[in-house]
Length: 185
Figure (tube, helix red, strand yellow):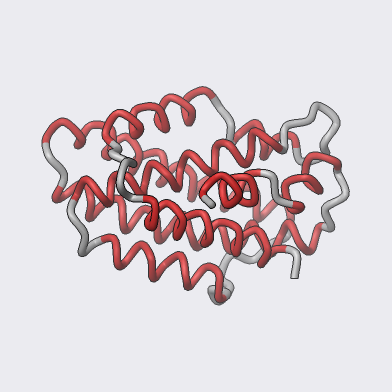
């Protein structure tokens, strides 16, 4: 079951359309605005996780928080270039992810760290599947597959304990698929 969900989350038609250059601007822009909302929610979650994390995890999480602040700045620049307003209401897929992040505040730190690692790993794998030297959105793909991001994901992997958390992993993957789906509806 997890293998099929992982594939659905990382080899989605949205990503294929980005790679092939066939994604409609309206669809990509919808996704971009919603992803900016998600990143703001992720920063909030990760900041709270940092505050309760054990000392060995704090450096990785603090670096991730700084990167998310930079990411929000980057979103503003990209949205302005594309004429996309970021002050949009959260769509159901974004709200569902937000609810998951809020719920993760109530679980043990090791579980929350594992969920964060899954969120970031699936994102890296998904964007890696969209890589193409001919995509008009190559700049976005390269941004979300940069070596620094991959190193961050690896560092989170050192903190994660995915064994025994199949239900949590499945929920993250389901949220990710719904997020890609949202862009194409």
